[in-house]
Length: 482
Ligand SMILES: Cc1cc2nc3c(=O)[nH]c(=O)nc-3n(C[C@H](O)[C@H](O)[C@H](O)COP(=O)(O)OP(=O)(O)OC[C@H]3O[C@@H](n4cnc5c(N)ncnc54)[C@H](O)[C@@H]3O)c2cc1C
Image (tube, rainbow, N blue to C red; front, side):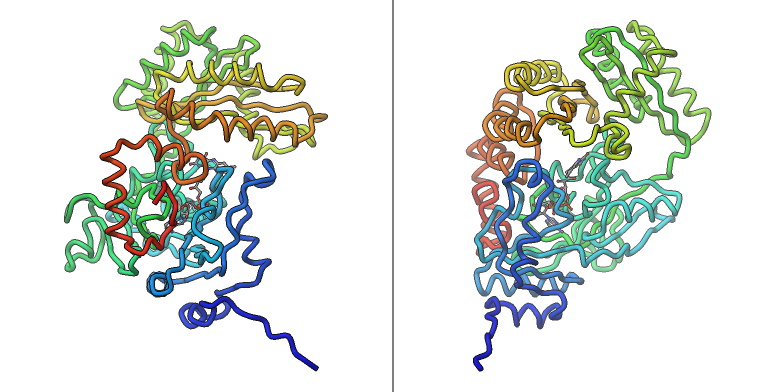
């Protein structure tokens, strides 16, 4: 009897000798599993390329060996973290069908929580909720992401989106990379370096203590690089004492003019009196602002509360009673992921329509543009909740869009089609070209559109940088046209 001999991928044996057979697979079902993305279910499109082989290293040295092998054989490498990227065309869309998919989640150790120097060092495949929890147990705080905190990895979030994700305290903490001191990176050639003022720039110093102490700040080059400049394997962050006091509040501002006036005053104050701030307009007349203060003492909290409340009151805001109830109801809509069925009627859909990062002064214009689009294009679809939202990202930008829920009789495909058409044909072009805004820059339409806005000099600089670092174009080929 003739026995079927299964053909393995050409690199199967070499990869097994680097990471062990239990960490390599060229089985079709495994390779296809890596093409799933969160948007796949909604849009029915957007799976990445099916990789030729998947490999799960557990050490930096293994990553280096894999990258060297890829260079020898000219095989593209696509690093993958938690797979939480949101674009309709996800990161594994790059490269060829022969890609090595590098699953980084095997590198997930928290290496050190250093209370004396207030730093944490972890491997880049660690899931952010685990990292945040361990840091918190030590009485410390590191802003990570709001959602999907149980899915995102450290390396994925530093490489993707705006290079560090949006923590729930984004309004005042900024993104995670603001706390980044240094990285351990496998370069596209396979060389391993440390960035930041530590062992890479002073071989007599074992810890990364200061980002720019030992060399120009090259850490930033690897932030939001989509994995094109290197594979991050370890990261060190500054951490702060955990703020134990928490105070939420809601004001009804009467109209957007009042609200925007208060917003503009508050974002200009230093230090920020609030920790979080979110403006909501539910289109039935309620124009609310919710805030959260996180502080280290009662005294600090009360001082900050006074500044926030006086600002709202001076701009015509009122609090208490019905306004607070309305605010909490709207707030619950944003917590649908936690509250699940209690908020989201069974079989209905929700979307954060047109959510983007826009210059603060253009926020209301962006919301007008989105609302016009919704009025024209969602006809015949019952929208049960429609709330404009805007939250500041530090002082100059806002994260803004429309939260929408649809009647449960609405077929998911009907909504998905409108959202998909908008995303692919309108969203990025209008956002980047007309509003000077930003979205996921390392994926899908966002990566095409962002690179198309680069000046000729910037494009030439980026291309030279990529060529110098990655002469064989091994890491994330095609990203931004590389
Ligand atoms: C429902 C939902 C809600 C979301 N809401 C938020 C939010 O509130 N705030 C927010 O900030 N983000 C949000 N996101 C987006 C998500 O946080 C980012 O897309 C993040 O970059 C995903 O991280 P990941 O580990 O899943 O990376 P992946 O999606 O696996 O990868 C992201 C990019 O990084 C590269 N990469 C991965 N690991 C490495 C590595 N070790 N070295 C080099 N390159 C690497 C990949 O090739 C890819 O280009 C949301 C996503 C979803 C699905």
